[in-house]
Image (cartoon, rainbow, N blue to C red; front, side, top):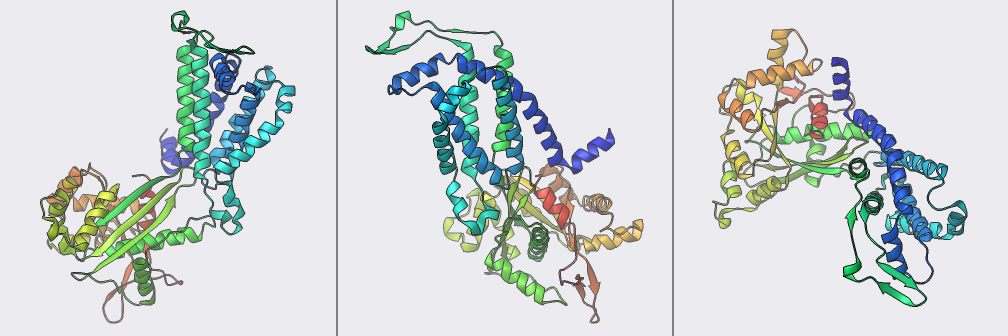
Length: 480
């Protein structure tokens, strides 16, 4: 049992995929039966079609055209690399439904369907068009194409068909409209009687609801999550974002279908300087009045992708104490300068705040300057918060001495150790409690002492700084 739980924890996407695949297969049969019965009993839909389309268009033609639209949208969804897996599962559901319909002799007959083939082709063209198929003409960007409207269109069609089917099966009503050579007739209100057909109502309602929930989870395009970094002066905010970007960039290099990271210009200038400083850090504390926009984005997951933006304004740490009043509105607007306004906007826009705890200050018994965090979190509307311990190499040395383990090879044990040590501080313990007893996430650069006695980052043969904790950090950002 423990092995199963561990596997699910390590392979969440695969576990969800297997679960959804089982549901798609299990629900395709009852939904197909429900739709075909609804098609046969579609009195209201037939009446409305005859009322609106008095030029000889049949329900079969409309159904075949709608199916063509659906297939066109599903084709585009299959091309979209972010929705390819979900599209394959939906294709399997479609094939199962078609087998059920044809084997039971339900739905449009073969002759009627062939006679309406031009309607299918027309619907297919419309589906490709409204789903964004014109993007296929841009051969240079085929690898990065996304068809969000196609995914949305697939869900809309399935929702309409499933809902109308449920209504047709379980709402009892007379023939409302009569259309013939003599014109259109509408029954009087007094002669109309409605009722509920309760035969199989609960079962069909549960089946339809569960089916639409699963499809919605499949169709729902990648969610967007915004993270914004806050921290005191010289707490390692810039180096933290640099490490996160370096890790995301390395992951993107190993994935030929990776989405561009779209780093800000300020971040690229900082990384360029960091890469050229092969023997040192380069990144120091930001001076008052300086403001650099540091941000990038990456996609977490492949089956259920999430667009994640990590941002932080490279600002002087003194602004941290002014943020609570700026966020709560107790500060006069004329006292809010450009830097403070940018910070306020970044916090309000973010879904989750990345809150920095400086391990170097902790180890040196210096003021942590984290008291403004409590007011910031309250003023920001109790946003989600992720606590990150920067410069954790100071605790790494202590951990290795006490446990005879290298922290980068035993990261989980090191994380538990960092949490135990940091929570000995009352302010940090109170902060952890306020944000919901979340685990503090330690990150650091592996360092060495150079010939001049300075502590500098270790680098691999390609010149990349060696980091610890950033890979698991990006994974955690996708799960917050």
